[in-house]
Image 1: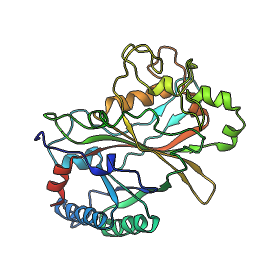
Image 2: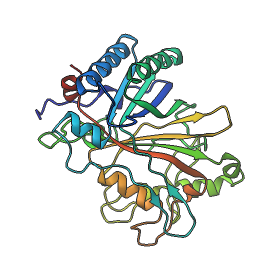
Image 3: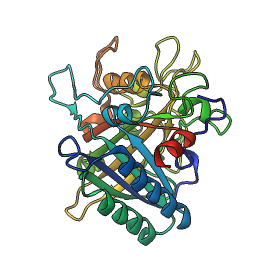
Length: 316
């Protein structure tokens, strides 16, 4: 792949306040009349429509579908497998691997709805919607727990290197994606004192964002802020295998609320490592992330978001 390969715009573009995450899969092998040219044309129309409406659209492909489209597949790209905690708590991160992710975001909810609706109808002959999540930006990029999401993101000078495959490697310019819908138990969370909440997250609650000088064993940062010396979440050695986060809250009519987590990385292994650490696996102390006592991922998939140039080839 040429060194000119560039990542999809939606990954780094300003985050629109309205989001729609759409996951689809083929009920069978695609059905009669299915071919990749048809799918490429439908996705090309979706890209053009979003451009006309000033919307951002990310296209992510699951392991099976990407392999059908292209030989330029990253070496380490596999499906999301359910993770079971090792402490007998029964906590788990459910795997619901699908074939296609479309993430629409923009400033107007009506435009975002129309774009996803038209696309899902066009895909209907061969793809079924497995799950969808309309979401939104809450205040100053807050999660509903009251903490700012994405504080640990790399700065603008580092984010591309962190989130995209390097030139000369298979899949250059593309990004590995983790997509999960987390359900919060806000009632239980609100019964926890602010200081204890901060110990669980590892940062001050809004309007603060500072990292705590002392990280509790169960802190979220101890499980997701990877360090070269293995002392994750603690200062003293450089961070490694950083990721780029673009998460947003959601709220359903039945009262279900939570965070739709979307993360981008240059390789998939660190995404898997973080999930295993959160559930007390592969950690020296075996301590599970305290956040998992109050929030549960009810879906999880890995995708690969090819470069703009690869998408141009796929979509015509």
